[in-house]
Length: 447
Picture 1 (cartoon, rainbow, N blue to C red):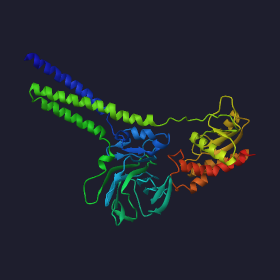
Picture 2 (tube, rainbow, N blue to C red):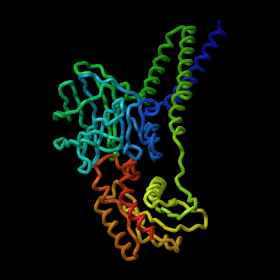
Picture 3 (cartoon, rainbow, N blue to C red):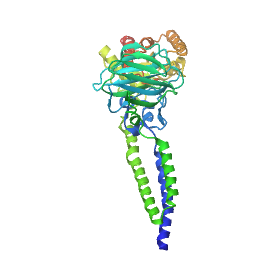
């Protein structure tokens, strides 16, 4: 009997140490993230190798409780629900929204056919004002302004209600009659995050007149560290309760708790964490540079923040227009010199055009040179325009062509999704950019 009691006591101490170890391991690894929930898709991850895209999906800093921080990891995020949601005929979508300065949130309803989803944009920026429209690919169609909508810098409660007869948008206490049709089944999408303060929280989707929410549990995959803290409190409570049990019953309870904790750690490390890691592994790893093949006239694109994407698109566009083989690359074989040098100008960058030109003359003295302005979402403020004017003056003095699509992009700024973020052009953005600069480039290289 004494020997059995000693064994039970020894096991109880071992149980305490092992349980604490497993509990801290589980609590340290268990966190909120969109990837672990496996219910959301990032368009940036699925379409492009963009900085911050994977981190936004896998990082615990993206989700805080029931708050989704769209401005984290370089912002400009575009996500939508993985599965289709059954829409009630009379429904209400509710969420709290906070927008930073010069920012906006676009939420959309993608139908099963995937064509022209209806979208509503709530904005605090003149460049992208509040509006209702349909989306075709990356273009905005049938735009209707919501000029009366006003948003502050703190959280506002947004309601979108619809019935078979009418629909309305409500922001805090202000109501705005609108005319939209919500699909019977849809994927809910959110786009935004131009400011680090941008966030949405407390998302609810339910049938009007009923309290049950269709979307609360759907939105949050886990409760993260708060759940780990709850487990720890339950564990302490069990330790206290087991002190009032007999040695045999205490042994059985401790054994069950230990098994449950062990299974929790195994599930977390074998199922949840590999699921998040597979997101990064599934994405195609693309080279950041393009090495010239040197089997035709070569154009080297230098100093471009998104050089690879621009070089590929520009090469295809130039070949189509000139009916001639061209190689546009971001890197040359050692000792090689390009026929033409496209000097990428970033009017928001720290390197001046004079410094870029000096480096070009030093490294490639025999190459013909052109300036090309690399467009960014922030290339339209007053400081950027001053830098552009200085570069154009230098180009005139040096008799070097200066290619720019700033005016074309500025005129089409609100025609659709032009940038993935502040630096990378979307497919639509690339089309607008190339339509503006390719004719000038083709005319220069033809002589």
